[in-house]
Length: 490
Image (cartoon, rainbow, N blue to C red):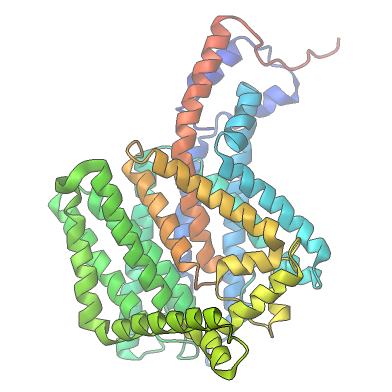
């Protein structure tokens, strides 16, 4: 429990209780822990995770599996710590507020309830999985099994304990600093063509940083860029804006050289929507500084990667038109139609088609957590939404979309009331969700989604807890139904 925020309420309860029973003793211990500070420390350590590979020497024969396993174990460990921290906080809230705590946690903010049901559903999906070990532990290299889902839950719940704007800004700054350091090292390493500092060793893709895979690094970069843009907008001093502008440029250059189109388009959409939301909230004068970053984005895109960007966007437009024409003409079974469908999205079309077939054949429970790769020649759909639908069935993807859409709906409804930090967290979630149309869910990148979704949820929770504390104080004033432990037997 946040020691400062709920001190008065817990003290009022304590004054009218007889300290007896294990329930009171646990409450007395847990309520002394400032869980918000603990949450900040855990999430701060989590934000350092992308730097993990820098401290390692590059071996002659690089082992991708061992490296990703080490990073995944770290993420799962921090997720478990986050879950334990949240459980202490939640126990205290239930002890003080009783049913109100359950209602505010799982009903008042419905996406939390949807995610809880989805976690249970994914546990049942293990039972029907062809490879149950794979469903529970996840496949080597990707490790997207049920254990990672538990880690995501812990990260989300722990991040939801963040109530203050200062704490949010600390975590945003940590994300920006780590991303900028990694971008600088990546650019230096690639320019020097050196095996010193960081893994990769030329085996998977250039400009992939410590993520080894270029696309995974691209997903991380696009989320970091929108966070840096948020820090830029919230900075009141010129030196702060200049520093954020420099970090934005550094990360953008890394993204452009990285060459992943999905993350590039995601940050393009994110910057545009962020500017629109700022206009709605604060008007043009206070929103205009963001135009500087948008100009940087457009200018550097065409200066450093203009031909590729134009070529890729033109290719996508042409391929999309061809697929629409094939569908309308009913010629999908012809060689030309097959080629058009399979080539879309850098040859992702063939994977998407196979995944849709898997979903049609397993609509209820899917094929089991992380088992979809067994049905498409050890491949992954390269679309997180199809990946979830194939692994967990239509109910699984329905729960996931319900969680995201309900959260976005609440955020838009409260757009003018959102704090600057809450808006940035929401934009980070939005950017990730856009990049997910061409990405895969993997712990080294997917943790960001739950990191920032939890931080956005924390803003709503702060308002809920204020209402709960007001109700509690009113109840105490009326001397009604104060929580009591059973009196010890004589």
